[in-house]
Image (spheres, rainbow, N blue to C red):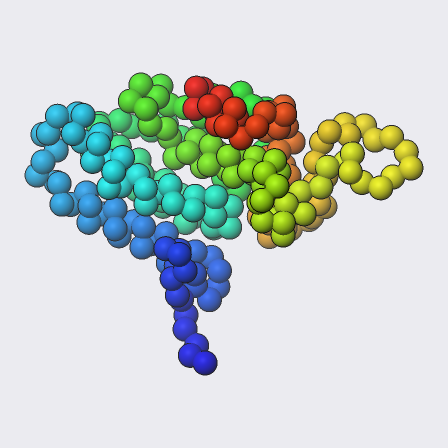
Length: 219
């Protein structure tokens, strides 16, 4: 059996340290090449540049975006910087700081709206942090509400009302957040998405996936 330091699986580069730095570096390299290929064509009409960005650059940022919960903060920042650089060069839009990653989610659902940059929303784009938040909420909504979702993931989301207790619980509609005292624990699937459900998505779980997706893209 050959021992390798990294390999590609379904378009995602997985390294032997599971920090995804190489995967992020590959995304930045590809995006750099795409941007360089039209460097002399920045004078093109806005609609043409927008279509180029959506067709040939944005998919690299969006693909498997929910994996960002496992990325080191420095790696996420580098991806965000590259995304912001593309918007600056193509559309002359400068993104204000919106630091979402590697922090406990302590806001309510209005944060989805606050994450929008006004200039970006006018051209049907969104800041990098918002794109991640939108992808993450769509992903966990599927996991919780669609019966054919991967059961190994669905079982990690435990609602208080489903616990076997002989007494009533306050906030029984909430999700149980696994206790942890380490940063690694906070970066786990169960901790991150349980926090996301409680603080952002809980009020929308009664909607089916199509209804929720329509609501989310109307914000």
